[in-house]
Length: 179
Image (cartoon, rainbow, N blue to C red; front, side, top):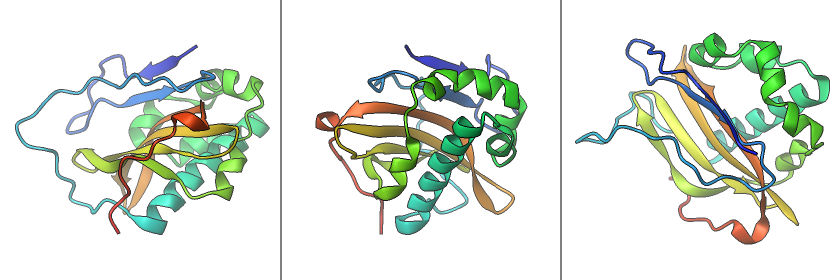
């Protein structure tokens, strides 16, 4: 089962209409959000984080979702996210969204044991919004992710999240982040 949380086409001036989704499937869905094509690729006024900084962002997100799932309290996850995420997701709604993942007892803390493997290079999808895709190659079941971060008040903050389980055989790195 795949559940996607979207902004219902609400527009935030000067920002991408936030796409917030969570994959609650046993196998990670390959469906991608539809984006308008532009003549020039988006440019961020902030450099895309790389190496350890990028890994720390991802580990922090995985730990925050894991702690929220364990406690049933999604306030900290929400409060540390970007304003658009906060606007569309109160703690009760996040609890509903993550109910399937929580019920599966999927241990996200195992992701903290490994460096992430990227299925695509981190990319700017809009000014000050980056997308990071990949997995943690745990055996026999990997943890896949598709994360969005927005540069807000001097730091990258969670803007969208997709987390799922995937067979390790399906994990094929395509590109590594710039060093």
